Length: 81
Image (cartoon, rainbow, N blue to C red):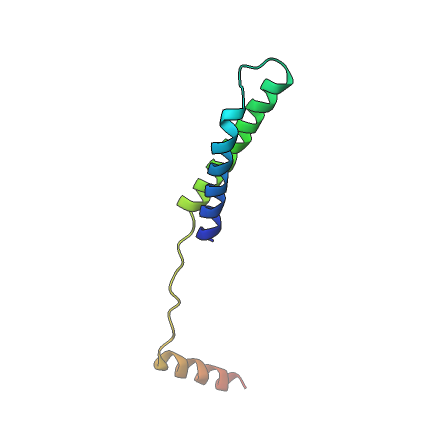
């Protein structure tokens, strides 16, 4: 999961690296609107991936039952049969 998020961040960084020099925010009309929208969506993508990377749930180790617990479970099952 983390590998995918890191890969998305790197790709987004690459797109920003190549895209920002070609965008002109001060341009009038549709070109300026497109530049602002493109940068806004890029920031949303970066923010979403960072949130996913920083606040991902931690995996818990699965505790294997002891033999004593296993034997008690077996007794309970035999009692109901």
